[in-house]
Amino acid sequence: MRYDFDKVIDRHGSDSLKYDFAAQRGMPKDILPLWVADMDFQSPPEVIEALEARCRHGIFGYSDAAGEEYFNILHRWYQTRFGWEISPAWLMKTPGVMFAACAAIRALSEPGDAVLIQTPVYYPFLSFAQNNGRKPVVSELRYQDGRYTVDLEDFEKKIVQNQVKIFLMCSPHNPVGRVWSEAELTAMGDICLKYGVKVISDEIHADFTFPGHRHTVFAGIKPAFADITVTCTAPSKTFNMAGLQLSNIFVPNPDFRRRMLRQMDAAGYSQPNVMGLVAAQAAYAHGAPWLEELKAYLTGNLDFVRQFLKAQLPQIRLVEPEGTYLLWLDCRALGLTDREIDDLMVHQAGLWLDAGTIFGAGGAGFQRINIGCPRSILQEAMKRMEKALRR
Image (spheres, rainbow, N blue to C red):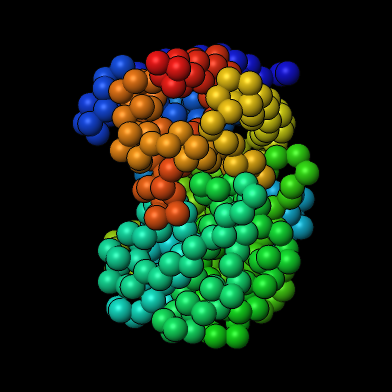
């Protein structure tokens, strides 16, 4: 490999949310963190070089992407990887997918309106609805034979019963690791069209799919879907640069764009972070080789965890992921309560994972672990888990 993903970089003392805030969040100070979705790898060298060059310039005034170069780089990325043709008019830049999703909820619905989510799901989704005065409605994913699928009957039923106005979709799905097929996306989209439901599609993990799986952009399936959809993307997961706070949001419907711009104006947000722009452009222009090697390395990490669980911890079942670098572990065969599982991981194994319950009721008995780290860290984590369970 050209890139050294085995290199362990000490992140302590870098104001890392993942490493430096254990005590503030009620965790033991020396805990090994594999929770929040950022990776322990340096961003591509081209990104670092571009940021260093911008720093040497030394002036960090109000900035935006001038000319066509930034858009053209994004266009090549999405056309080449996903077969999705984007238009310059669709692009809105925000400080994050979460910011954009909340702005879209306010723009495209009224207080008290229902927002549908599919649990277990990325835990802020619930607060997106609640904190903006909307009513969250849950359609639970169906878990059978170790695999999650969409319960289309329940999906449609919940939309009709609650007069749902927005479907907040997670694709690929975090935490269960599904990469929705085009048929599944089409079935959900047709139901949304039938009942006038708008779609906010969080596709931040689109670049992370395991061999045999390919992400389908929901808005790219057919024009009618594009017209009802706000597609949320970002380089933050792909190139490990969440702290630079830049997301690319695509909104084909001009009325949706106008309404979202009003919400952004109301929030007092205008120009994006200059360093985020520089990093994003460098990443999408030059980061593809780095990403391909990273995905191969993550596949190796997945293989290691799969084999370790099978050989040493068969009572913990891996929900086979199709995408993301987050693994969903079924711990129900341990016969422990959720509080006991959390205690086992945190206080006996010394591991900071994400408890399944924060993702919704369907997450009871599960844990989420981030494998975006050097393999030696992952090996240490699994050994700690085994030792705690044997004890």
